[in-house]
Image (tube, rainbow, N blue to C red; front, side, top):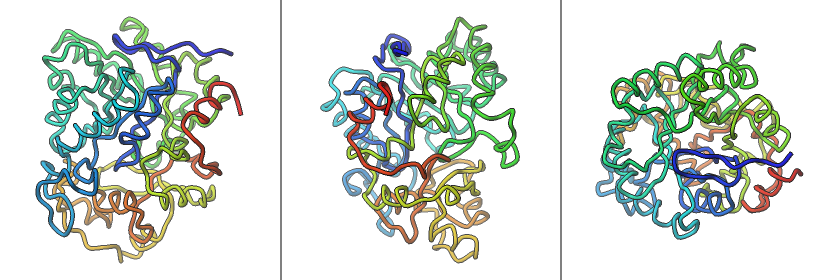
Length: 363
């Protein structure tokens, strides 16, 4: 089966593979730039850009961490990441993933547009006002992430009524993805919510709005999985965790080793200050949190709105900004390591080019 290219707005992505946006710092310039260079869609994560180049872009630090959302989501850091990714991929399409749950969401979307992103992807909430923040940038393509046809319908209705526009593509994400889920704990294990069962209904809903391209995400691992999703009507797939197993992935070597050493039973759902269950690897941190002995929670960065300035962090037992940044910096004692359910299958580190060849031509 030869794969068709993917069209998102005015952009054509040669291979129907979107690299998932992984924060904090797991998909920045090196990974995203190289995925786009090799014909996929590279996706920069906008999370924690104040940590880019060892916190060079955070204007204020407290306890060596960026103070407040203004510094945690640094416009200068994001701009530098986008421009450095551009040096790698040239004028090929490049996307930025911006969580709807983050504080300063609108400002960060605007920052990404000004810095030259082609496509904005948003999940972790229902981005009903997303087009507002990309006004004045008519070429920017907007791609929400949903977990049901109902969510897509709500977004399309609102966008059409308020902004006279529709999503340029939509990502449907099942509960095998890494990081935050669009389901409750109970819903994550229900058969009707598995990716293979929600792609079709979302494709049907997308057809009602003029055949919006649907991108299937969550647990996609190899060429067979890609072919299965395309056969269900998806125009492309999004893959995150598998790209951690590349030399170009911006993650610390220790992060990659956590996944290389993980067993199937090590990848679990856990609570999160964002208010959704999150999927990651059982590590020293998760054991400390279970015993309520995790690191102190100070809410320096004020990263996500649902956390309510550290209140939810205290409930679940960890600060997500601090623990993700520890993982990015390679601290295996207190780092939080997100992974999709198939992360345990990672057994080698290869180049992005080799991975893209495997995904399109087979193992």
